[in-house]
Each structure stands twice: as C-alpha cells, then as structure tokens.
Amino acid sequence: MKDHFIRILSGFIIAAVYVSFFHFEGYGFVRFYLFVLAIAFMGMFELFRMFRSEITWKVMLPPVLISFIWITLVYGLSLSAYYNTSPVPEGLTLLVSGISSLSLVTLISILPILAMFSIGYFVILSEESKTIQDLGLTFVSFMYITIPLSTVLLIRSEESGVFLLWFISFAVSMSDSMGFVFGKLFGKHKVNWTLSPNKTWEGYIGGFFGQNLMVILFYYVSSSLFDVPEIGYGQLSFFAGMIYLVSVLGDLSESRLKRGAGVKDSGSLLPGHGGILDRVDSIIFAAPFFYFILRFYPV
Image (cartoon, rainbow, N blue to C red; front, top):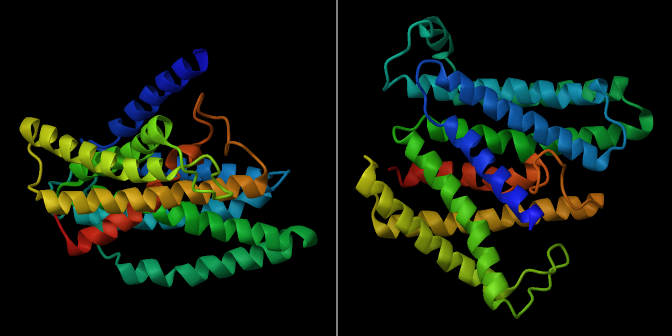
C-alpha cells in the first residue's frame, strides 16, 4: 500500500512539473528548452549506467556535448517558427533574429561533424577495450534519446502546440494505463514475448480500444472547456491509434535494453517509477512519429 501511495504521489508531482513547462510567457520557451535538455542528459546518464560500471566526465563528454548542440539547434528552429506567428518578448529580439537563418539543411549537415568528433574523441582518449562500447552507447543515446526528445520542441512550436503536447502526453499515458487495466482484469492469453513475459493479448487489444475511447473523451471535454483546434473524430482516432502502437514499441524497446543490462529499472531517481527512461520510453517513440504525421494531417 505504501509503495502504491508513493508511486501515485510521485506520479502527480512528475505530471505537474512536466505540464508546467507547456505554457510560455516571456522566457517560457527557454525554460522548456532547458527542461528537455535536462531530461535528455539524465536519460543518457541512465543508459550509460546500465551498460557501463564506471562513469566519468571523460566518457560522458561526447554524448552530452553532441546532445547539447543538437537540441540547441532544434530549439533555434522551433523558436524561430514559434515567433513567426507570436510577438517576440522584450529581450529576446536579438536571439530570435540571430537564429532565424537556421534551416533543416543546417541541422542535417552537422550530423557527420558530430559523428566524426565522437569517433575521434573515443579513438584517442577512450580505453582501448572500451572504445567500441563507448562509441556504441554514444550513438545509441543520440538516436534513441536526443533526436526523439528534441521533437517535442518542434511540436510545441506548432500553432496549437500547447494542446498538441497535452494531447500526446495524455494519449501516451492512457496507452500504458489502459493496457495495464485490461491486462489485469481480462488477461488470460500470454503474448509469450521474452522481453515482456507478463503481457497478454487482452491487455494489448483492450488497451488499444480503451486508450482510443479515453482520448476521444479527453478531446470532447477539452473542446467544451477550452479553445482547441477542430479535429474530426476519424482523425482523432487515427492519431490515438498510431500513438498507441508506437508507445507499445517504445515500452518494449526499453524492456529489451533493461533485460540486456540485467536491471529492473533504468534508475531510481523517481520514487515508485524507476528512472527517467522508465517514464519517457513511450514519449521518445511517440513524439517524432506524431510530429511526422502532423506534416500530412495538420491541426
């Protein structure tokens, strides 16, 4: 009972902190950027700790540096896009003007530079027996954590960015919750995947329809209370279904990483929830996919 109470209480605190960064007033976009940066850094640290017994600043410097550069560039793009349609706060005019020349080409062209830096750094400074491991962890952390997390900045820069962040966060949360509820209540037929042996077909299928229903209800309640973009129920159901599928994939992927490392949780930072990666494993898969489908089905 005590463990459940701690889990619920910390869950509310996590949600409150997370949501508090959605709304931008003045320098709010800077706060959101720093929040995403902090989550990425902590997630990378947890990933390295799972597979490496000793962590030093020399080992963490390349992943931290390339993640900082990437997220900062994406922040620049999203900031420029956001203030194209919103007034620039006093004091940010020079910053916004300075990054307005950033483009997707700039972002892509820096990737080989970051790769060469990481390879050269570890070849020269890493222990010979750890070179490949450190390089692998650096690139995995960049592809698995940094790039996907940076897309939440792009989602927030959309015209309906606050609502879209609320939407994807709720959809991801319900994907996990509804799957758990239906699995507990009706689960009989095991999926028999070694990486997640307790999952059932009833949990997955019931979770899909339960999450879809909850997302539609969420939109209905939101639209009656706030000014939200108009989304048809067909499009809404499509968004929810796609987010559910990639959220499951994100959950299973992190389970595979933890099994490979021989650990139950990615960390112990969040009481009752494990580590940062245990909380963002689904959103790091859902966010880039959601941003991608928004290019074709804008709201």
